[in-house]
Amino acid sequence: MRIVCVEPGSVGDELGLVAGDELTALDGYAVEDVFDYEYYNGAENFSMSVMRNGELLEFDIEKYPDEDLGLEFDREMPPRTCRNHCMFCFVDQLPKGELRPTLKVKDDDYRHSFLSGTYVTLTNVTDAEIERIIRLKLSPLYISVHSADPQLRLKLLGIRRAPDLLSQMQRLHAGGIAMHAQIVYCPDINEDYIETARAIRPYTESLAIVPVGLTAYSNPAVRAVTTSDARRVVANVRAFADECLAQSGTRYMFASDELYLKAGLSVPPYADYEDFVQIENGVGLVAMFLHDFEEALQTATGAPGRCSIATGVSAYPMIAECAKRLTDRLGGEIQVYCVENRFFGSSVTVAGLITGGDLLRTLKGCDLGERLLLPAVMLREFGDVFLDNMTVGELSAALETPIEIMPPDGESFVTRICKK
Image (cartoon, rainbow, N blue to C red; front, side, top):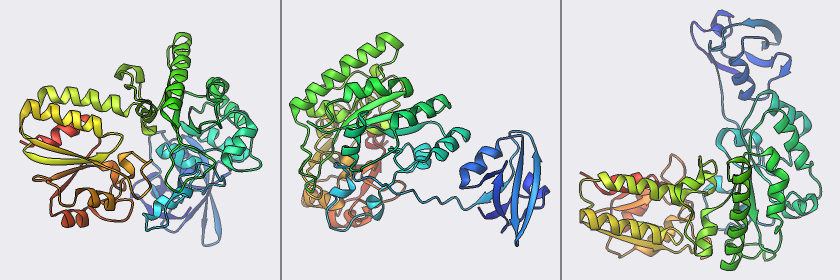
């Protein structure tokens, strides 16, 4: 890795390192990416190899654990692409129209799993990389399991061979790596989800089961989850979770909010989700939203005025009820609009996959009040672009209404609507 900057007065500066030097090894291990540097930056004693103009420089480092080497690198780390051809892959179900480029990336990178909690299959991870994960303490990781049956897993992933997942998990667990797991449930295919849960439970911290997401362009070999499917899965998961709770004090396995919604059932109470470790997987979002909404509603001041909110089919009943309770208490007028997904197909009901075009189609000509509020999940992280590359500004101009983006939590729902 090439050094781009050395902090004045740092350990690296005292060693005489300069921008342009290339860090090649730490403690005899070849440097692959910034994870190697971050690990040894917190160590006390190690060796460091640096290449400068074709000359190899060797250093023996002794420092305090919290003393920074002071080296800066280009931290861009393109994700390793996926080698699988999953029968339910969402990327393969995308329409041919213009899309945000990042949506088309198939990533399966253990480094990004550690950094941002993305789920990986470990099918492209070598034995040496398993050892690297353990050595650098890249914990926790998030693993897509789908089935503990090796042949069924290969079928789901659409590949002929892969490392044995349970063996990988055993090694990682023995090496002190925490893992959270997920199963994408495909009706009539991986009905062994409880058996899978039992097989991986000794090595994992939690397990989420989520329904397969199908667009209008999905694989015909995979069918959508029905109401009866969802009710059966929820019942089985809750029975297994109760068993785990009695044995070890944690429910361990959780059904996603979407499964409860598909089943027509109320989500469990807030306390049942324990520490919400699977919330990024859509597990406990509704319970947390309602909990935070209730607390914020008790102390809310100000007035909503006349405004509007747009959301997806799944969240619409909850958002509409919360809006009504808010206006019942504080007055004002809030119009809540349910946006059907035409871009991906009507089977896609989550707010996070609504496009600017579908918002425009639904809301054009509607009474949007003084402002339209949209949840941030509709947009690229830290950006203002919808999945179809329409910007917030373009949508606002087309609707002739100011648009405000709000975080998708219950407290923000109250505070952003009730402007003082």
